Image (cartoon, rainbow, N blue to C red; front, side, top):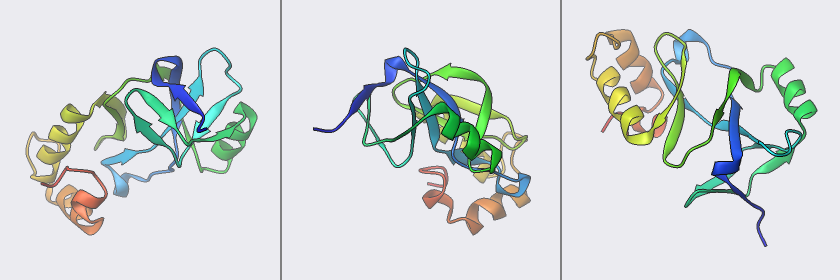
Length: 141
């Protein structure tokens, strides 16, 4: 049987990417930590289904620190309680956001279209160069 972890028992502690400003904005895959046992960390690949994380690769917190030291994981300044239907993304200023997916996708659509003062021709080109919707979910639809 698959190992299931309730999202309500997890914190987001980072993401599996080391981004440069040229790659902003971007949705990033979260790294989760079990709140009751902080040495249990889960990295992709995994699936998020009906309030559960399933199929994640489990590593120790020490291994997560090692990945961070090799720029394979970016740590958040503070843990964030994991929630259903939320995505972790990096905005145009390099700030990490954890928001409901509908809000994040709406903001990314605005950026892709150059709206809201956040997007620019450069941002639109970067989104298009990365495949737009493929990289950012529904951001360019």
